[in-house]
Image (cartoon, rainbow, N blue to C red; front, side):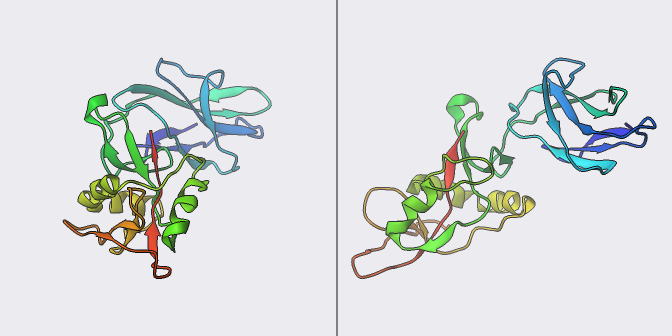
Length: 219
C-alpha cells in the first residue's frame, strides 16, 4: 500500500502498488477514534480490483479525531498502510452529510444536528402528491425523508449558494428558482423562487398547480 490521502472532507484516496505476489481479495479503509485501526473494528471496503481507488466515509462526528489505515488482503494475510490522522471539521451548511446536503444546523446542539436536503428535486407535482413523494423516498440509503416546512425552505433559500455548491459537488443540481411545496399548514403552501419575502399560497381547488419537491431529513 503506497499511499492514503484525503481528497475531501469525506473521501479517502488509496493507492496499492504491490499485492505481495498474491491476489488481492479485499481492500478498503479501516478507521477508529483510537490509533491502529483494523478490520476487526470499523472499516469501509472497496470491491473493484483497481490498484487506485477512492473510498467515501459518511456519518463521522464533527470536530472529532479519527485514525485511518488502508488495508489489502491476499492469501497470505492483511497488510495495512501507515496511519493517517484526521479531525473531521465542524459541519457547515452546504456540506454533504448523511444522504443529503446540510441545509440548516441547530445551535442548541453546538451545530452537530440539523437537517439535510436532497441534492436534486424529486419531481414537479400537484400539492396532493408532494407529501407522499417525499415520505416514500428511498435515497442514498435513507428512507426517513419528509416534505420540509416553510421555515426550513426559507433557511435553505438564505443559504442557496452554499447548498447549490454542495449539491453540484455530489452530482446533483442547483435549486430551481420556482415554487417548492412545503408541509406547513394550509393547502398548497409553497416557497417561491428561494428569495426574500416571496412565500405564496397556491389554491389547489382549481386543478393541479405544479410545484417542485425537495425532500429533507433530520440528523
